[in-house]
Each structure stands twice: as C-alpha cells, then as structure tokens.
Amino acid sequence: MLRDWFKIALWKRIVLALVLGVIVGSVWGEGAVSIKWIGDLFVRLISMVVVPLVFFTLVSGVIAMGDPKKLGSLGIMTLALYMLTTLFAITIGLILAVILQPGVGVDLSSTIPGVVQEAIPLSERLMSIVPSNPMAALAEGNILAIIFFALLVGIAGLILGEKAKPIADLVNAASDIMLKITGWVMEVAPFGVFALIAWVSGTQGVLALLDVVRLAAAVFLGCFLHVFLVHGGIMRFLLKLRPYKFFKGASDAMLVAFSTSSSSATLPVSMAVAERNLGIKPVVATTVLPLGATINMDGTALYVGIVSVFAAQAFGIELAFADYLIVMGATTLVSIGTAAVPGASVFLMAAVMGAIGMSPEQIAVVVGFIIPFDRPLDMARTAVNVAGDLSVATVVANWEKEFDKDVFEGPNRY
Image 1 (cartoon, rainbow, N blue to C red):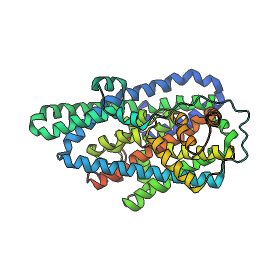
Image 2: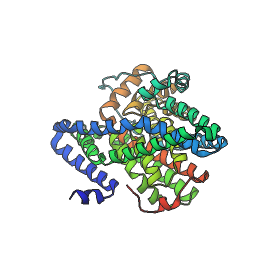
Image 3: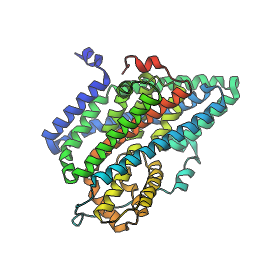
Image 4: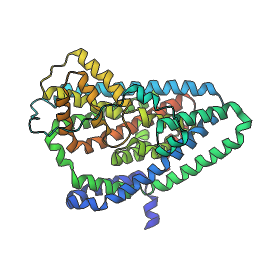
C-alpha cells in the first residue's frame, strides 16, 4: 500500500489531500484546530530549507554561468518581466472591479476598524538589501539580503575561475544536498496540506465569503483570468509551448502555495519543480525564483487593486481615470514591498487607498471588514504569485538557452 501511495504523482496526492481537508474541516468545524500542528510542522520543514537552498543554489548558479555579462542581461530581463506581469495583474483587477462593482451597496457602518500597519518605505526596503552582517541575514532569513550576498560570492567565484574551483565544488555539492532534502520534505506535503486546509475550512470556511460575494468573486475570477490568460498566453503565443504542460508541471508548487499562503515558504518547492518538471536549468531557477518570491506579487497586486476600488465604491468616492493610474502605480510599489508571508498585503493597502483620498479612519474600517475572510483570498493570490514566478523563469530560461524542452514535455518526476 505504501509503495502504491508513492507511485501516485505528487500533485494528485496534494489535490486529494486538499479535497479531503475541505470535507473533514467542514464536518469537524472548530475541532480541526487540533490537527493544525501537522500543517505547521510541514511549513517549518519547508521554511527550514529556504535559506540554505537559496544561498547555495544561487552561488552555484552564478558560478555556472561562466560569463559575468550573462548575469546582467538575465537580471534586467527578469525585473522587466516581473514588472510587466504585475501591470497586467493590476489592469485585470481594476477592470473587474469596475465591471462587477463589488463595493456598491456595501454597508460598513457596523464594521470594527482594524489596525493599519504603515507600508515599508521604498528607501528602507532598498537599504535592507545590503546586509550589515551577512551571517545575521542568513540567521534572520532576510531573503533580499541573502540574494545580494550570494550574488557577490557567486560573481567573485565566477571572476576568480580556477582559483575558486574548490569552493565551487563544495557549493555545488551543498546545492545537490539541499535539493535532495527538499525532495524528502515534499513527500510530507499531502499531510501538511490536508491539515492546513481542514483548519481553514473548520475555522473560517468558504461560508465566510458569503458576506462579500462580489468582492470574493472579483478576486477569484481575477486570479483565474490572470493565470490562464496572461501566463497561459505567454506559454502558448510567446514560447510556443503547451500551457497544459506548464500548469501540470507547476501544479505542485501552486497547490503548496495555496495551502500555506506564503510565497517564501513555497520557494523550495518552486525551485524543485522548475528544474525537475519544467526543464528550467539551475542557472536560471536559482536566480529568477528567489527574486520572484520577494518582489513578484501578481496576485497581491491584483487583490490590492480590487480592494482599493471596492473601498472607494463603498464610501462613495468617485474615481477619475487619473485615479486609476495612481492606483496602478501605487499598487506596483506596494506589491514589491509586500512580505511573502500569509496576510501581509492586508496591512499594506494603506498607501494605495490613501493615494485615492481615503482617510485613515476609512482605511481602518476596510481592513477590519476584510480580515475575517482574508485567508481564503490570500490562498488564491499566493498561488497566482507562484505561478507568475515559474512563468517568468520559463521565459528567461528559454531566452537564455537554459531550457530543456524534453523535460518540460516529458512526464513530470513529481
């Protein structure tokens, strides 16, 4: 029986766990809290490998490039693609918010205001990229600082060439070890997903969304359209690849992202499926994906845009075309500054809503209204974020000739 279990593709096991989790949580109710520790343990396991995996694979990938110029072109292309897909996400979100008008007729008078956290200033965000102590950055899990330091180590090894070969061999071995550990951790995914989904279904459930049907519909529809039109379109028309193969290969990472609501926690899974399922070679996967988990927040941008328009409609604030442009620009900055952890975007919408003339009191009311049912929406937008990371990585790998089409088209290993 155990052998038969492992013969089933991992994504199928995760889907089964997700469905069973919804059923068990719905029946068990609040009692599902008692098994949440299993999901927390799974999140701790994948969080455990994030820092060493990012550091070792990134250093190894940079050294493997063989030419420092290649890193520059890859970085510029990656940033441009992430910004472009984020703009697509915001545009889709705003169009849906205007068409569906989720905030019209909503009564917020009985809502208890929530605590609003100030968005991290862009200057502070940029400053945190350079670690004052690299060891502290590794200990604290500061991904941007780890990426910066790893890039410096990798570039130095790349320039030194043969002199750095002993370090390069050591880093390559460490990278292989971390990928092997990630594979083991992934076998725990179905059990962790089951516990997390049962907990969410039991304590919050889909019924929580009935209070905000149009807002929830706009968010879920926006996520669906962005993933299948934008990223599916990229596969079909830009890369001439089959979208089905991309979504099948990315499904493990998207499902884990859906259950954990954390792009950062999903990063080891994303890196594993990028290489083993999508044919993205380590040179690209180790540089593009860690950066994406930090700055590429398509789902978050879409969500913040929709909620901002929802809030304006609820309070009767008329938005001109210029206001929508302001929302697009502000949302781009907010999405870049969003921490890759569950629920972070709820407290980072103040900057966007403030940009369209909402008072601090109104913003606090909107946050208080959203918090009770944010988790299901957070799960959906995190899956979109991870899909965007893998889509951009596939594009970059194709353009940099670091893509194995046979792996992409072949049977997935997971």
